Amino acid sequence: MSFDLPRNIILPVDAVDVRLDPGPHPFERDNAQAIAENWRRETAANPALFDGTVVLLSALRYRDSSLVGRCHAVRYSTFMLWRGNRQVAGAEHAYAHAMLVAGDNALVAIRMASHTVNAGRVYFAAGSFEPTDFRDGLVDVDFNMIREVREETGLDLAGAARGRRYYALSTATGTVIFRRYRETASADEVAQRISAFVAAEAEPEIDGPVIIRNADDLPDGLMPHMKPLIEWHFAGKG
Image (cartoon, rainbow, N blue to C red):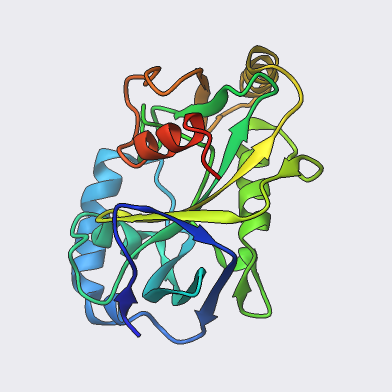
């Protein structure tokens, strides 16, 4: 199956059928020494890094408005080596974004904290899929979205209104699966709640919220994949 999906366009997605293969990812299996050496360099530069478990794709395709794929649990150190060489055949990354829409239609993103891998970068609160995000081997995208938003911002989106479907954008850096989640409060009110949560955390993952009020309101540090998502939202798509 490998990787077979249109790139650099936003795709409507009615179903996500990405399954967790219990076997090792070939990239991790075949690069043990390079992974270990790179991890030593990464942790020397940033001792706060933790070698937890994430998932890395070995296949993904788009058919009949569905994403169908296979992934494997890998160490974060494996992901970091892949991250530095994204053109590796047979390995790609997929992740999810809860596109947080405030009651005034502004978007609320976050800026990552200085001790994180993406220090200073701006995107919607999110994190890589982890084994806990899978149910009977099938990824639960909304569980991942809600979990990551709660961990990073303190917001609970479990009861928030959701867009009727997912969308996906696949680029050279990976595939983001996203969905609108709507808060009734204004962007300023949502941002105040996030800031209060961050202030109370001993070691927060984020520096704080970032409000985006229109398609031209692009903050410094914005991750490249965010610009088309922001333009899509304010164009009234979906």
